[in-house]
Length: 193
Image 1 (cartoon, rainbow, N blue to C red):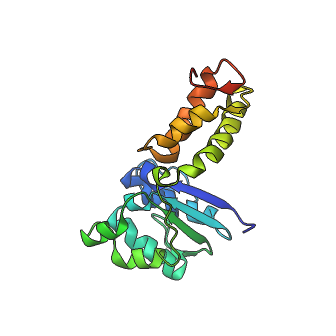
Image 2 (tube, rainbow, N blue to C red):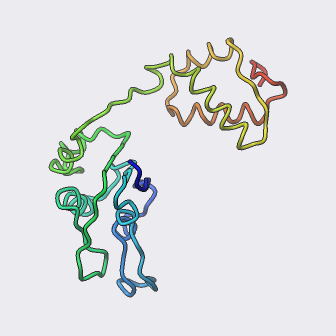
């Protein structure tokens, strides 16, 4: 818990760079590898690595992730020696991994290794009672980011937000609140903001 926390957005890393980003590489391992690079698993040694959007990882990399989970060992791209790390692995996805396993796009053995403890978070549309707390948090976050002093949101606006389906989930709500804070004319966000 006191070790490093390394967050990796697996969906944002091009497939050809995923292995190098996660496990590192040695100088000369491929064109453009002008120096050794420590991978994210090494950075998370003694701590936690968060693999966000794990459902976007290629099948070839899934084999390597399975090995790291089972043994703690991996070999940097172009490396001759295996490195061993001790990292807690947390994975998240908005994809249905069971369906991906059934269609052969996600390894079943990796799925079971990752699903040791599973938390399912319902979409925002199914937990509208959380909207007011999230709005309060996002207002504070947006105030700080944009040097604003918005104090809150009217109940009327909260009621409207609670009736929306939120297909973009919490990220969409954050974006809506941030826009309202940026363009707010008063201390409280109302229907005109």
